[in-house]
Figure 1 (cartoon, rainbow over the protein chains, first blue to last red):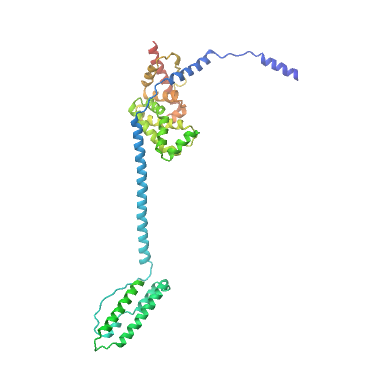
Figure 2 (cartoon, helix red, strand yellow):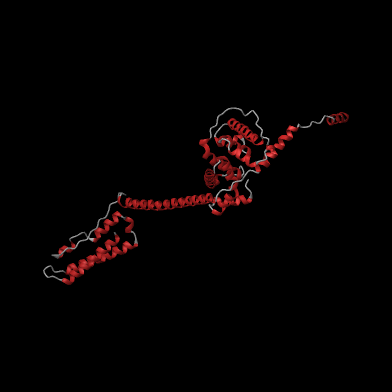
Length: 190
Length: 174
C-alpha cells in the first residue's frame, strides 16, 4: 500500500510543468497599464455654484416641508373647532330633547291680580327638571330653587297686603324687585 | 458596509444637517463630477446632473440599505442623472458583434490628453458604455439596467466603442 502511494507521488512529481503563454502576462500587463493610464485622466472639479444650488434646493425643500406641516396643524385645528362646534350644536339641538325658551317683558300693572298673571317660577322649574333631570339634582339648582320659592312666598304675602283701590308704591317696588330677582335666578339656571 | 466616519455623515444627512450633507458632497464631488462630465461631455450638463444626482442622494438616503458601498450607490445615481441628460443623443442598435474581441493596447498610449479627446469624441452611446464599463467598473448587467438596454446591446456598444477608439489612437501613433 505504502509502496503504491510512493509510486503515485513520484509519478505526480515527474509530470511535466506547463508554462503560461506570454499572452497571459500580456493581458495582465495590459490591464495594469490600462489602470495606470486611466488614473491619469483629468479629474474634473465641480464649480462652487453647484453646491450653492443644491443648498438652495435643500433649504426650499425644508421650508416647503415646514409650511406643509404648519398648514396641516392650522387646518387640523380649524377642522377640530368646526367639528366641536357642530357636535355642540347637534347635541343641543338635534338630540330629540325639548328646548327651553325663556323671555322677559315689562308689564304695567293695572290691578293686583296681574302680579300672578304669568307662568309661576315653580312651573318653570318643573319644566327645567323634566328636560334636564340631572340639573335638578345639582346642589346649585337646589339652592336657587329654595331662594325662588322663598321669594314667591314673600311675593304672595305682599300681595295679600295689597289694596287694589289704594295705590301702594312701596309694595309695588318690593314686588318688582322680587320679580326681577326671580327672573335673574331662572336665567342663571337656564 | 459604510465605515464609521461614513456612518456619522449618513446619520447627519438623515437628520437634514447641512454640514453633514456638505461633507458627503465634498467627499464624492470630484469623482462624481468627472463621471458626469465623461458621460455628458458638457460642463453645463455635468453641473445639472451632479446637482440633480446629489439632491436624489440626500432625499433617498433613508432607502440606502447598505448592500453595496455608499460610493457605488451614489455612482449609480449620478450615472443615471448624467445619462438622462444625453438620452436623446443615444441610439442603440442591437447588433450582436460582441463575440469579436476589440483589444486596446494601452501600452502604446503615451499622450493622455489625446486619449481623453478620443474618448470624448466617441458617439454618446459608445462613450457612455465605455465610460461605465472600462473606467467606472460597472458590469454589463448593471449598464443594461441603468440604460434600459439588453446585456448584448451593452456588449456590442462596448465592442464598437473600443474598435473606434483603437482606430482613433492608431492615427496618433501613425
